[in-house]
Image (tube, rainbow, N blue to C red; front, side, top):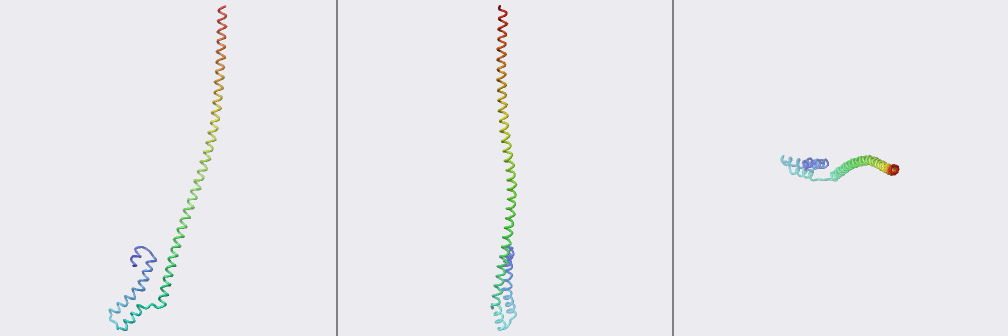
Length: 165
């Protein structure tokens, strides 16, 4: 039993198996040794009484050991829980920090998007004004061309009229 507990690596079970070994197996081993030595019936009777006698002190000691092992087990569980809580808190803080950085990055990206949108609107207004100016210039040029054509036609008419007289 102790070997299995050692393979599993459970300290509580190792300790419990060791106590079981001391409490039950060692007195049995002593009685077997006495029996092999060939003691008297009285010695055998005394040995049996020692082996199987569980007085109030022994039971109280066993309860104390059980209580102590339960307390130790509870303490171990509490330590593990505290370590787990600490790890969880650390992960939470790391996550919050990372989320704060990402929030700042999103805020910067949003500000950049707003600035780009504003610049795009300004560029649209400038392009509209340029289009209007180009249209006015074209109209002015067409009017000038028409006026020059009219003036050329009038001059040609005057030249033609002068030669025909």
